Image (cartoon, rainbow, N blue to C red; front, top):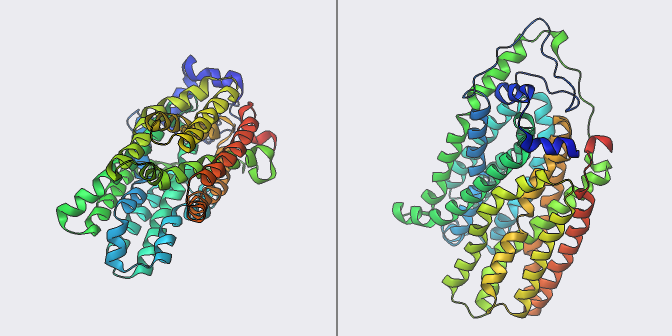
Length: 445
């Protein structure tokens, strides 16, 4: 966003911003420009909702949704051996299961702008969480490998839509707290992923089946539906009450794929996710090859996630306060580069330092989530930029674990795979230099 708008993050909220935060975008049509006054329905003045029914309820709903955004994935990763044995999954089908999240995020995330143009975000989120719950229940209720994969794809479709919607909701409900709220849900996402990975096996052992270790997270998705139901009903009632004259003109279609900023955002999102997925998939193996016991290698991997929790909360706020993101982009890239080089040269002796640097470098993820809201003026621009960045980005990210695995298997060592990750980091840094300067997607589309 422009510097004056960014500065408003800490300057407090105006009466209008408080009204929008409480009432929400489902009651007041989003203005075409962030600085233009919002026009209410002609002939009908909706009553402002109270804080519990508006901004606070939205925040709670967003955090509950964020808890679900990785739980279905990391719980499956923890129980993959048991699932393979229970369903007799071949190696090829197991590979499909592990690459499915990135592909599903790309495909289904790209459909979200069309859904939002026809329905309120609250209504779309209700359906997305129900689909997530249904998909998780389908995959634990079958003995067919193909049905299991189809159920997983269904669950991931719900996650993909929610991935794209959360930056939009931050922009709509909390326009002067983009960094803080993005940090809160990014941290919650990380906590959800960590808890699901840690609890899946104990839950499975408690009930004597891997199916319980996966099914329990469907209940979490159903809980996430609850805050959005009243918001969806309010949105529907407001739409019915509005007269034809009150309906805002259709916003200009934003096409990030035709802009330099859109592609830079997608490349940055994709390359940082490529590195993150590669680290999640292969870091423990790297430390085992360096001489660590399997349990210690797992703890080092967990350390990257644990250290990332507080950083995920702080990074978006820091991004929102800076006039330009150039120093932040370069700092995060430098941390990742030092970690990669260190793991290639001294993977055993410097392991703790490399884990700390990786946690710092991977905070590029919450930073880019906050940047989506900072690089768009309108809700239309935000959802279009979010969908494009994440759809293209996750396709790029899907290559990470695959190529690292191929290079590792071919060379029998980590020098070449780490060289590949350094090359991806160089591309990430170049894209980061493009998105670092304050600009808006609406000015290029």
